[in-house]
Amino acid sequence: MSAPSNVVSASPTSPENGAARRIPRAVTVSAWAVPVMVLGQFALLAGVPVVVALVGALTRVRDRAVRAGAVLVTVAFAIPLTVWLARPDGAQSLSKDIHPAFVGLIVAASAALIFTLYRARRR
Image 1 (cartoon, rainbow, N blue to C red):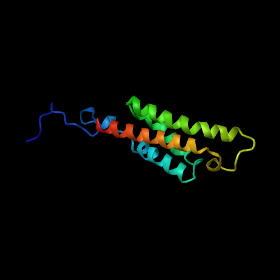
Image 2: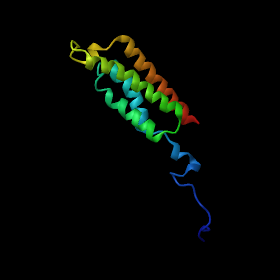
Image 3: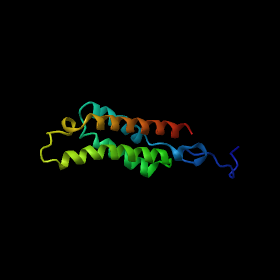
Image 4: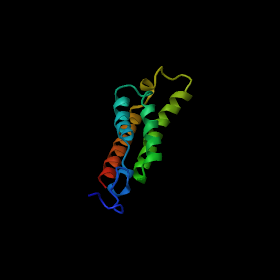
């Protein structure tokens, strides 16, 4: 016997099982990679996961707190990057020129993004 044709099963992308609201793995990995790269003296390369987290959060995540966290990480990273690019006597790398307070701010903003991603995933 076959199943009745009017029965609809929950597909992997149906809103009934929550898969449509999943947080993309790239956003989560990027949120973890930013503080690791900044603390590991790869601050300029940390721009890549910052952009991935921002674009992924703005285009794929519905939670406003996650979006705000991604924007916060981006702004916290963009300020020292802009200062480094604008200074005529800046250091050879962003990692050498960035103020420790901005490193702390970037790590704190990334921690806030990670927390909001965790909270959004648990809802």
